[in-house]
Length: 390
Image (cartoon, rainbow, N blue to C red):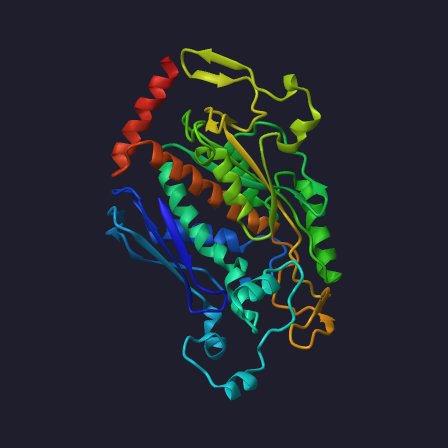
């Protein structure tokens, strides 16, 4: 599968076109809207989430509730567009109109794409950069991930995400929790934290950051259960699935690090406490005694749950802005301020879930026959039996 997204934060809509989806998959707009609603929730979200209520429109590739095998188009309209029609319209405007609007941005915000993008593309108004670089684009990436989750669920694969750390406060989470438990506890928590006590402290930290005009980041974790052995490949760097997942997670706005399994902790441990012993029984076939490597060996899934962590930096738009330089006058000023969240880690957990789900589903469709859902289901069933008896 592949997808392309288009649209700006305050433009009329966000659009994605997805190609390569198998036919005969039941898909309705509510499957997508459920994930879009989850992305908009979470403690610490800003005013934009009160303006928008993201709802997808399926424009192609689905007929009478089932995919046809043709490219699928999703559209999510921006409700705030009505207030930005002149500013963000595609029609040419005069210099006088531009000056009258007084919305040209010349003060880049530290930590954003503003200055680098303006230099790269020659924009004297940095709105041409920030509108596309905005995390609003993750709306349609989540829509793509929601479709991937529908495919995964149809073959018995479940995805769950939760928050491990916000503002230095770490959740105490038991190892190997059932994935249904992770899903239920995460959904019940305003900060998507499985540890209720830590979640309360996280909310207090978010409140304090908001009061201080500051922001805080954190760590999210995604778990995927029910995977066949052998997704990905060891034969070349760009076919390793853990590498693809790491790249996809790093591409989420404000993410600055990725771990698989133990991740960086493995550097502080001897090999005997890092690698997972192999076991076999007649009912399940091959498995591991532990899952320290997070479901991957040699760039391939080993049948254990995939465990991915992502590090999100504090959002760089601050209500007590950092210093910057005006690109016209070259004088020092406070950086510009757009609407912002004091903490978007809970929402980022949902984004990360869907980004990982996309990469997993894409690898499945690369590995097994997938013109229609029944082909995919039968091929995976045969593969799993072959692996059990290997």
